Image (cartoon, rainbow, N blue to C red; front, side):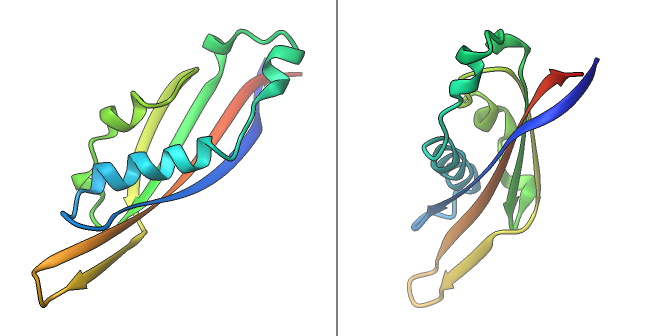
Amino acid sequence: MTKRRAILEMGMGNDLHGGDYTKAAIRAVQDALHHSSLTFIRTLGIDKSTLEVNVTIGVQHPDKVDTDAVAATLPVGKVTVKAVKGGLDVPDDEVDDTAVIANAGIEVWIDGA
């Protein structure tokens, strides 16, 4: 059986002080999740554990994202997280601080015909 993407949801998150890329990524994922209600899972009787959930995080420094910590915040499915170059850093040179802005794309795949 082939997989079909059933959901694509986007979110944005930030860490305004501290430059924590993982915190910004988790907030982006939570933002995306709060825009979704996967009612079709219950309606169609789909086993939540069979869902394939792919998360892409965009930040300026992808290597600074703890993808395991991000994955742990997803409530269902077999989760994979990858971090890529994207997002935005907004430096404040006066106080040596950086606001980190992350984007998240969450795809949910189900078995389809």
